[in-house]
Image (cartoon, rainbow, N blue to C red; front, side):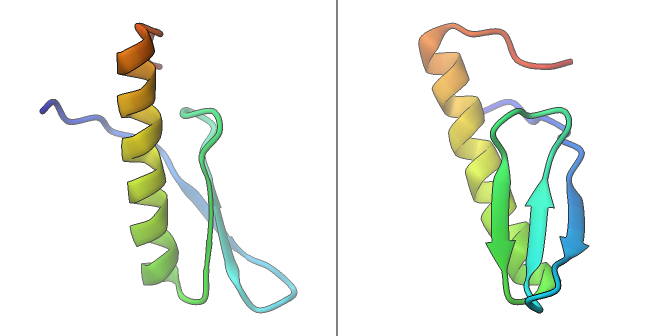
Amino acid sequence: MSEYLVSIKIEKLDEGVYLATSDTLQGLVAQGRTIAETMEIAQDVAKKLIESSIGRGDPLPH
């Protein structure tokens, strides 16, 4: 499997949880109680989004 570098932004919300989004991979949204948990979830979401795009033949961001 190929490797992809995806830029992920994490911010702490007023509710005390962390939110991860990406400007380079549309649709990536993940939320967790800690930064580590949020990153783990975000990586899983990114993997699934990339696999889905490849399966459909859609282009991936550069």
